[in-house]
Image 1: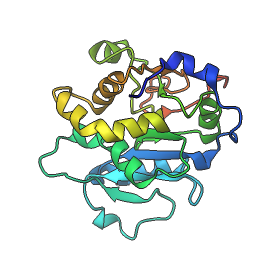
Image 2: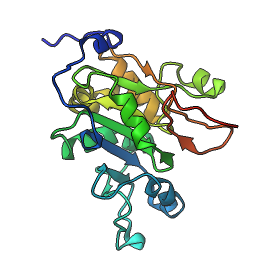
Image 3: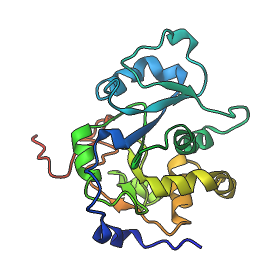
Length: 231
């Protein structure tokens, strides 16, 4: 039997014998659509580092009109089992599909949308604070009170990105199909995943550097909380 320790205590048991977390320990799972890719790819290419960052862009169908695929973009994969699958379920399955193809020497799985912008150094500074061997769900709620009211004040919003530790991602990947069936009535993939994670006894670890909305713009940016933002 596996016992889950409440995640707010896990940082006190941080393993100090492992090497510091670096970008090779992080895998990105990005969700997008072929229809909007031509307008969204510039967001990803602004932070993606070819041959450095690890991860995949999952699209709803093969991007035939965008071939040959540019090396400046993440490797592309077509989400499996598309026929009759709601968009929200497809998005929720990205963590499972990412784990299946990238699970060696990984500490963190970072999920986002195709128009999410990550500042990698800031992201690493955040992840280094936590024990990757514990159960962690890191992100923040929306900057919109209405969004939090509609969905949850204890949910990481995918537009801002959120991070899952390896053990939590592994547990989700193994149990996701059962969980998706249980929560199929929910309207967003973020809400579904949050409910699945809550079933493991894990709550959201708030890091205010994850922004769903940034100064009233629709761009989604990730900043380290210590960064000073000038008007």
